[in-house]
Length: 170
Image (cartoon, rainbow, N blue to C red; front, side, top):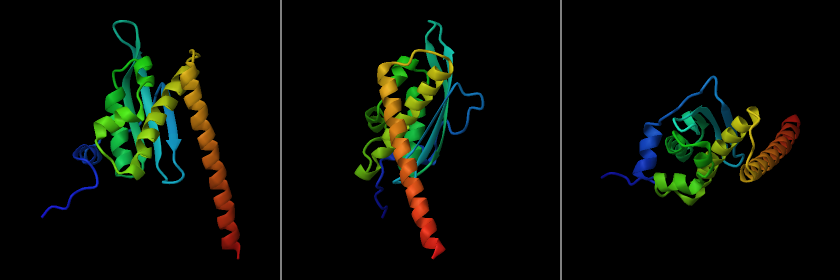
């Protein structure tokens, strides 16, 4: 008898056979995000080119994720959702779009979809910043939120490390 999986068939498919894994060495934008609670870390790389209509599109996208089954699967799914989209379309991708593709995930794993979306926002922000392009107000707010959370994570990590060092000194 086969044991039922906690994860959807779609999540397991992308976990076992992820798409677009790797690094783009000359990436136009890089997004790095992490979650201190679970330890997941995601890096997303985008290459941007103009399409036939002159619109900037994500022509290539790759990821590297250190994380759980869902983190790896949704990172891969996100790359397929975003590839070929204009920058404007890609900025509208949300964690809900990723969850629609993934199917149900355990409630404790929903944060993985937020991390994937945040990695995309950061890669787009990085691209726009590096190329001195206008950053839309909504994207700026997302970037500020992500950076604030990152600072909180770093502060917590520093406090934990200092606490751990004190214990080890005893």
